[in-house]
Amino acid sequence: MIHETTDPAGASELLASDPSAVYIDVRTVEEFEQGHPPGAYNIPILFRGSLGMQPNPDFAAVVTRCFAPTTRIVFGCKSGGRSARACELLASQGYGRLVNMAGGFHGAFDDLGRPTVQGWAARGLPQEREAPAERTWKGLSSGAEKPER
Picture (spheres, rainbow, N blue to C red):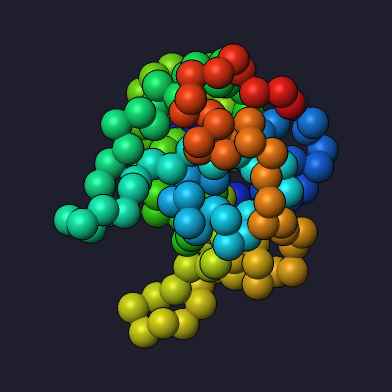
């Protein structure tokens, strides 16, 4: 197993019990700005472009510049797919304390649209819309020093 998997309630408990753990939201900047867990960092794994969703070529470089391979990182996205991919990608870069938040911020659904995992927002877990510049994609991708935690 290259990473752990937990639901949003488990991710919330992990973040509350381990102050050194970080939450990285891999959704687009626009999705992040609509709401995210408090204290989240936004490092999109994909960007929305004229040809649809395209990989962020700087994703791994920004994560590795900002966070040590020993950091416990919880990755979250909309439903759990992009965050699972982020875990796989960072595991290949030598990161070993990765957690995928299955169900993501909005929840996971089956082919008929029925919820299979309730997301962070639907569970009523704390969320915010604003973030300090050093936790936004713009701030993190600017090449500045490691963010304060």
